[in-house]
Length: 565
Image 1 (tube, rainbow, N blue to C red):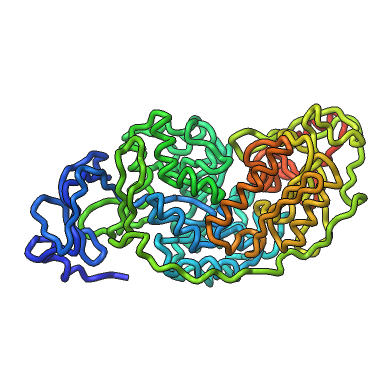
Image 2 (image 1 turned 60 degrees about the vertical axis):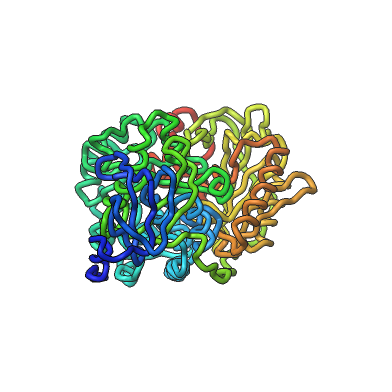
């Protein structure tokens, strides 16, 4: 909505006092990536000027502390925090964030249009601006239908809603390259379109960009990011709970291309956000990896604002929204205070607890016979990659009767359809390191069926049963010890306060440590069913080769494995 600034001009000219003036600050100029010592004047939630002569109804001396624009997350799935939107907003606001660009495709895959409506309602009274991209791939692929399917017509009903600013990550790369008319209709919904194209290169990359995709957050190497930059894409440098890409990618950021580079947290559990931070953590990590602090701040502010056409934020300049954070210094980057529209985020009223979204878990606990895996000889095995959500396609000679093979860290992994379709897919995974026990969860991107792994069939079934009995959640079972985090909102989020979620995540972490597993096992597990990420995945149909883009058997002869694995 266009606003008249006539009533702000006297304050900008200094003929009337501003509402508040922050004096003696080091103010970040996002346009030149430099600092300016001066005073910052704000009126009616808008920056009216920077200088040394402003008067304010209220004045505050910052004694040389650093002031910069509020931080912006260019791509995130709020559901992955396990928090409902209001709780998520309160948590990230304390770390300097004032805007997040979120894609609600997790809850949309479970609950369709109702899920999008739920997330939009969560914007109310939040201490940050939650702006949404329409989920373009519900389901992620035509084979992976979860609880809903949204075509262009269904998405069009939301296109003009307040808080919707574009089309979310287009994960169906084969469909784009094939010129699928259904995808073209979705791309026509908005001129702002996020991409999702891991490892895409050469002429296929050219075709993907030609189709209208503008950004990518899936780069894992400098070479990949630089090619996509040269072809005109925005690069979202990602650092989530398991997606660790900053160290590999920030060496490619320069003063010349920083305007095309932003930060993304994508998928972060609440405990990481609470303890280590949000986009402030990305800035600290990037600086520790050698990036100039000013370039890192530019990525986190004006670069992201410009990518999404948000000309009302991203810089501390006259006429822009007074979103800002105050820090101690640009290297340690400890956020002391956050303001959104000129108001301290701690002054925002708390909102009533969000309603739960029950009834999305509709499956019985499997039997031992249903999860049995039969075969021997060469086998395809999903290999975890530390610090990444990509997997390797590994080959082992084994007999299924010997599973779990703890000596070689080969465990059974399975997916149970949670939508009443009575399908169970079983495979083998390497990399979790469990010596005992099992884990299961109703968070498994993107269909969000129940997924489980562990060092014994009985405990795998017990973990799945704990998730079902909780009507969605995350569970760890170690002998008689059962630890559960219920997720009462679509089996994805909890309506509990953030500090309670953090405490329960801590309990799960302690439980899995006793089992001998890797760090963040639930986050790694949640991505094993995501068929739009290379290389090998597990679904309720069985094993899926995301490179060949088809279902494959677990066992096969060596020649078959060489051709398809």
